[in-house]
Length: 239
Image (cartoon, rainbow, N blue to C red):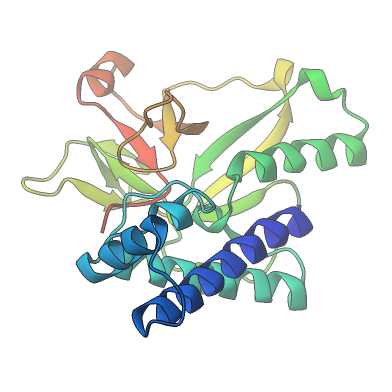
């Protein structure tokens, strides 16, 4: 899993370096200014993410400055993963394909516990932990996930359930989420709503893709109430 992520990240880094070097040469007249380099220069000047870079990175709606902060956090994630092993709290937003990590999580648990893979699934539970630094041990099964954003509702930290959205608060940070593999026939949840988790706040791209998994959120209201409110989670905000 890590090797696949590093391969994609290194390919993106090589592309960024190469295009920036070529743009610098074009600006001083050492090489000709192609249409691609001209578009790159316009995007950088206007603070937009160049399309060539976006095509090789996780889907994003962020402006260039915020995207670079995200890029640096991804590098820090990979460096920590290399030096210290699998993170205790995973930042799914930093992965190129977060679904692959969750799939690998189920597969490794099935091998360890001798479960049939085709009869296993995931369920989630929101914790009362808001600071990932306070978590010092891996879950015995599954993982902690940080960095999720909740839209269409608020989160009651004391009661651990969805609540009505606060006025003028469109997006709230969700506490750490536990993602736990389980045998499907043993999963019995009550008082929860299946909530889609999207990569960006745009939810789906032009190809109709964007949802990476579903989360179980506790609620004392009928699921239809939250469906009408457009409740969803996202791995990234647009800021």
